[in-house]
Length: 231
Ligand SMILES: [Zn+2]
View 1: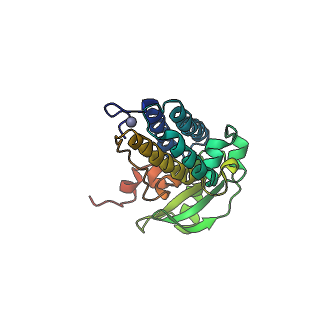
View 2 (view 1 turned 30 degrees about the horizontal axis):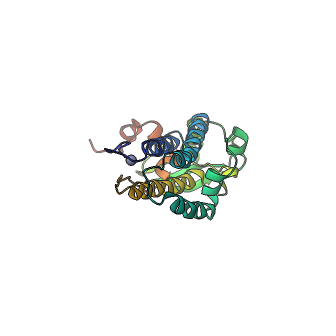
View 3 (view 1 turned 90 degrees about the horizontal axis):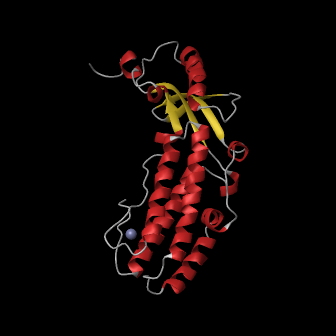
């Protein structure tokens, strides 16, 4: 997304949209480090709220704004996550509200799918790498007998962050839906002034690229060590 096209009718709104998108990407990249994840999630929540504030304060070039926006507000009210993000009191996610419903699963993976899970008693706020280290030892001894003969079978940890204030279900997926709604809203707003922003939607092929941490993600040299690559 280019933050500013030439003669953008709503530059601050456009910039906030880019900012929200930036922090949403950061949420994905910090998925396995709880504290930075919370910082990025809160920054995203702030930025996405500010899109609608900005839009309401810089609508002078948008033809028929009031009527259009009234309709959009109704639409946002119908969507639980958006309503919570945009309309409700300012949400600030804290450690307790993040960890109360979140889950961590660890065990033997094939590709990025869990094959055999281990039962564990983990404090969710622990960095995934630390959980993975413990998991690797168990999986290596119990399931793999110290060998890594089957390519793609290794220890892994899958996280699911759930934030009560934003509803049930994995939180980043909810944020992506909200982000895409906002991108469509900002695009429509551009069109009210007769131009197009060509904002791109936020697409993600497989959340497990980010929610699962495998041994080879944490240490890519393992591919060679385990003879998983042709030399
Ligand atoms: Zn623009």
